[in-house]
Amino acid sequence: MSGLLIEGCRKLRGEVTVQGAKNSTLPILAATILTEDENVIHNCPFLSDIDVAVRILRYLGCSATRHGHTLLVNTEGMNDFRVPDSLMREMRSSIIFLGAILARCHKAQLTFPGGCELGPRPIDLHLDALRKLGAQIEEHHGEIVCCAPEGLTGTSIALAFPSVGATENIMIAATLAKGTTTITNAAREPEIVDLADYLNKCGASIEGAGEGTVVIEGVKKLSGASHNVIPDRIVAATLMSAAAVTGSDIVLNDVIPAHLRGVIPVFEEAGCKVQVKEGRMTFSSPARLRPLKLIRTTPYPGFPTDAQAPLMALSTKARGITVFVETIFENRYKHIGEFLRMGANIKTDGRVAVVEGVPKLYGAKVSAQDLRGSAALVVAGLSAEGTTEIDTTKYLERGYEDLDVVLSTLEGSVKKI
Ligand code: EPZ
Image (cartoon, rainbow, N blue to C red):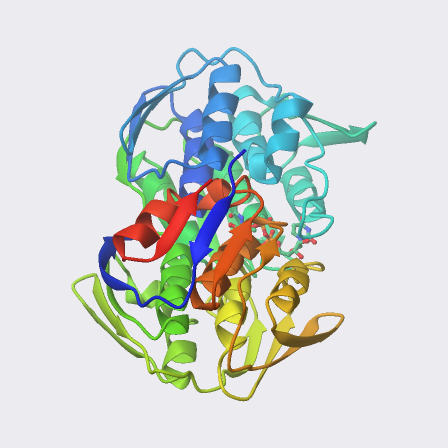
């Protein structure tokens, strides 16, 4: 497993293209199980999480082959409805396969995804919703055994929390259910809209994705489709943080500004200039950032929890105080201990973190603990004086395609070791 070596205090310059969205590719790969035709999914990033999803498809008997950033998926040969614990353990979001397998096979067997670095990651909202759609679900010894001998039946589902994964599982399962399903308090993330766009191309009938209420008319059969995955808004926010914290001007290609409406105002408050024209962002930063004041993570279209760590890296050197409130996950501050090793001044109390900007960060040996925290350590390393060594890239590779190469293209000094 490699680590990363970063020489800080260098300005970035140049332009890069933002990769396809991990959190859009994953549910779309699960949804291919609903069709028995060829599916062509473009703009799929090279990520270990995507590799796990491909392995799950292959384990189930589907064919999935990569041609550059395009994945060809044909599930005609699907011959299993069980996902083994080893694969479930590799990626918590494998639960997204449950709705698809159940809709296709009328039965499904998975294990509990288990907690991850961010907290327990419960799936009660997923299971309650699938039960409402008519699935019988038994949970014992960590196994989830589902069956719906007559198939699923559409119904109304009000989510207690706008869970992204639960919204996706319901949309996928309801697509082949008999009758209409209405989801209220649905998640509104752009990745939900992208999934609905793909499913509608396959012949589904989904209205309202991206709003709080989604209506799915069950259909009998879906055909395959070709689809371009949307760009990854969290990777874009991470690259913006890297530029902001080094006082740099960069250009990002393949950006959808509407997807960043919870993030762009924060950078502008810090004194950055953000212009987007036909998907091309020109981003410029002041020499020293103004404080971000308050960042409270909320479901889309609010400030995304996945951008909390990279923006905190930025705030450690901004002038003044920035208060973070992490409302989505129980345990998403593991990067703070590592920032303190670099000279940051941060105090936490439960879900609140108070960051007092310091004039300098210092390079140090730091330990990556989760995906977005790893990206935040890279951002902090870019702005620190001296060398920062990150012990492992195994978390980073889950969500960032060749971040070392991307940042080197922008003239940053980031090397795999
Ligand atoms: C998705 O996770 C993303 N993952 C996460 O990105 C992202 O942080 C999260 O949405 C929030 O935006 C993928 O899309 C693959 P949730 P998901 O269900 O679906 C609680 C990254 O870094 N909850 O919206 O798991 C849960 O505990 C990853 O790319 C229940 O209580 O998120 C959490 O506190 C990390 N019961 C909150 O809801 C449930 O049944 C948000 O979870 C489900 C969730």
